[in-house]
Image 1 (tube, rainbow, N blue to C red):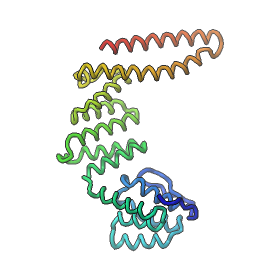
Image 2 (cartoon, one colour):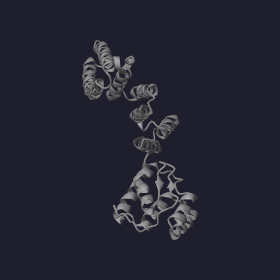
Image 3 (cartoon, rainbow, N blue to C red):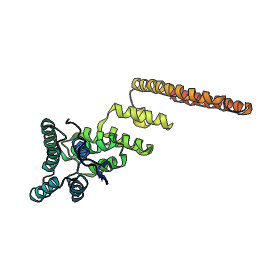
Image 4 (cartoon, rainbow, N blue to C red):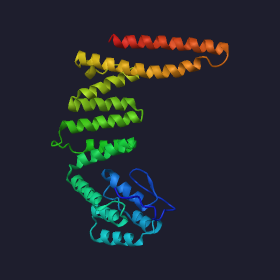
Length: 273
């Protein structure tokens, strides 16, 4: 990657990217954003407001004029992106060649697979709602048999992760169930099992039909993870037991012991399933 340039103009009013809602103040930041978020850039990324931002806020009227002329004659978004990278010179020529290869690879991808990568990146950035909307568009499109059931299984699974990030666990379980129906993947069953344990809900039938040995392994993994989490929580709770007056301490200890008894009963009930 090229050296970060500090001599350029700093915008008084930043350009807010439509894809990730990130404010950009310099030409270098614009280049960095383009280079590292290519997957989410729509074909309409180059718009009048971006050109005007480059002209006025970044004080680069020559680049803005070249973009306008080129856009009117070619309307090639990819070449416009390369033009910006070269004019600002934030990246060296090798970096730009690598970027061009990424552009070619993206154009050759199956459109639905490209959409999935786009949604995955939004999910990684924490924009779960936008990712879900793209996943839903993929699933509502005409099914592409060339992609296979594994592709659609991954889409449902990744959408489940997004719903979990939004704490919508019923939708999470629905997506996991659909993912398993598509791909028959044991990893998805494991996620369904852990989700039901976390939510203290009935274990789904698909999970109940799994190999008993695998189920025991999952249970052991769950108990170990829950135990480690409980140790951390218990340490924090125990530190608070002896705060306050004597009567408050007594009630705190009594409530703490009752909670532990209930947790033990619930764990014993699940282990016996």
